[in-house]
Length: 327
Image (cartoon, rainbow, N blue to C red):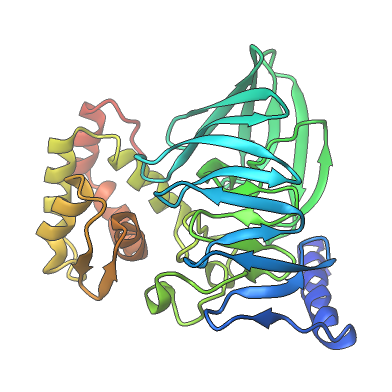
């Protein structure tokens, strides 16, 4: 049996053992939040949530969000504070202060490198944005990682304590308790599923707990909402770096290219690219109070058609004229 298949089978058997042999009850509350169950390490622990179904404590780590719902502090195990940029296509952690030391993060389309005390470490990722290695300023490899398909770290050599591991290029953070922060909610790689229900309900799929449609080597979910094509994710982030006028024009043109966009063309352009991020928006079948979720649940799910559109010669010419690299 190939190594990858043995790892997946091993992860599945761990979950099966928890359920059957160890007779572990996964306890959930009325809102679908898992309130008792295994941590990624396998030990059992309570999980607590606030009134908005956001995780507040698990495995010795406490969590605090700002009024925008972005995580800005971890207390207890892995204690740290964060400065977060809310205005990017994917919210970005700009600074982390941990044990009195501040680390700064620099981004392009995704995470590029970090700087701590005048020293830089550059990230190197695989096809789904998981960190495989870090190199220092002299291009020497300082750390290496490998992962099981569903995100559990299999090995690490080096001394870095970075949180940007599995899907780290996209801002997914692995905490000291092993849970992975994917913005809207947390993912447990031992269970190979999220610990609470999808905030966008059926707009994210029929199974409200499934991770990337059970395709972790071909899909990502940096928002914790629904599976996305990594290539589409990169194209969208490139698009969002364009000036407002060009973004609007491209989206208006793209709107006429997709039957699935239909009536949502003008409203989508106005809300997503007009800055009305707090509005409650109806786009086709999607209704949500967060315009980025609209982006996720509509454009990302039109991945193949969107990729073809943005790879067209006319669109590439516009992107190149804006100084972006063609894809």
